[in-house]
Length: 397
Image 1 (cartoon, rainbow, N blue to C red):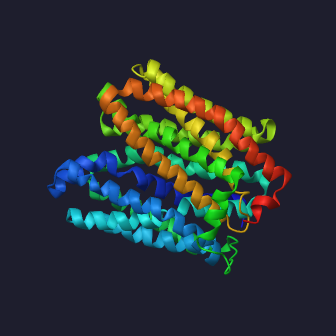
Image 2: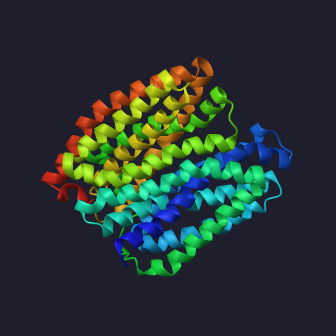
């Protein structure tokens, strides 16, 4: 099987999962009206998804190391597909909450385990480009999710949204169980479940990188979380138009993913990381200064997608070398830190917006990203130096 085919199969799974991750927000009013519950109460469906999605990140990594990465992704996508289909058939809020919780739990495996599998297959010289491509395809799903969800909910119903995603998930699952069986996937029956986490966090080089990932999630995911609400507040556009604008994030991420490996080879991974964080900072500042003008808004949205992918693909590539014998575990910790940081950043951002407004929110997060870029330059330089000088120091964790 060609490496390109591997990326396409894993990328489709990532696309579906990331699209599903964000789909409830634009269709929440439709869900609340159909199930005859208050929109605030219906918001528990988001919480029901996100909590197991975060917790199970830490469980699937060790399972993948022990039983095989491709095998774990395939089984998880099978359950994810069934749970997504059940969401379309839910006739009470309780049913929907249970099905979303099940969906979130098994969606948690796809991103970190796919990244670990890519790291196993692609040599270091090709790895950042492969990771960038995979992440770009996956986050295109996130960028398109509001447009997809809003348009289907508008023209059909909110149930049609989950039905459409279930069909996409069926295609992805079939590919994993047929053509995908050729993807090489090693097993390590002696792999420990939790001990590698302690060793990864006990090493200064790896810990510093995970902390950068955490704060990257706080400020970049936090910024992205309120883009739709900001556009709605400023422009009063409908969900379909908002989703189309936010697609710029996903398209820019795809382009950056394709370029990240070449840029890292030409200028070095630390430079690409710095450029990504600075671009994300500029995105927030552009939105703060010129977001009320459509051109300024579009530039800011695209810069955020570009900056995110350049920074995150660099951090992911560095992290793949921390535990060659337990990459699933190492990448699960990255995903947990990033998504956990995103949750924290969303909460902080919500408080800032409520008390000081959108302008203060984007200004503050833009400045914070510039500070993070300065800190990351030194923190990740240490980690990269350790990996280059003594790769066995971290790869044997």
